[in-house]
Image (cartoon, rainbow, N blue to C red; front, side, top):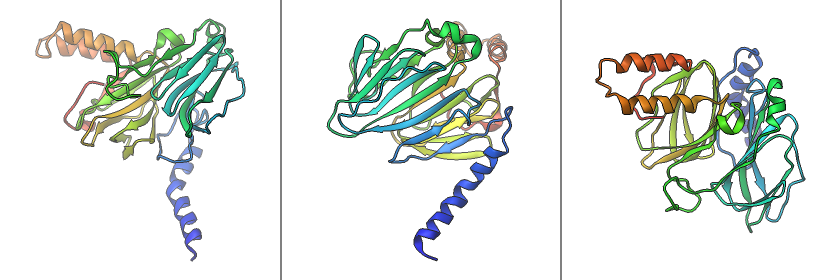
Length: 303
């Protein structure tokens, strides 16, 4: 068998299980997905994969290239700059967006972008579908630009938000979606859990992370994408020797409220307080979450 034919058959065998499981999927059940890094860009997840909630695409832009003017009527758009320097023209604003920047463009807002650097630039493009009952209020949203700066001051490494943080929240998007950048120390990761309300998509920005999604264990390096639908147990940890980073899209929004309330509870009560576990369980139930010790792997860190 010629090498080219062998490689084609091998690729088909590797990806066939993902394709078959997707075809058997119903509107009530979504399947986890893993997309390995690629130098060519392309789709990470589509609207079809997420029950129409969101899509994520990695896009490469040649130097000096400007996109055509766009204004989406049925979806919001988000941009995260992975490589290079961009210039965005949004309404009457001209925004310089270097590596690590995030930009949220609401529906019906015309926008263009241009690679202003001398090398190929790369960004993530998020498309977020707007529920029909929220279309009218979605026209009242404002664009949001988050520069690549840490919450505590200037960056020690240009383009890297060393403290991570929320890019957009429920307040910015009328509860449709949120996006957060997370840093994880070596050996750490969140408690294994599952959501009854939210779907999550993880794009690894830096480092090596191990994901447990349903019954699968995935080693995800920079440029990988992992989709964890609601109802599916999942967890991740940093299996490298340096801090790792990923950016997560969450639909619908609202998880930040849980994290804020949980942090407030931790400040109010010690974990050894007799009422702490009861109040934490009430909070977990309130947000439709479930934690399962059978999925845990130590050590454990905050989300």
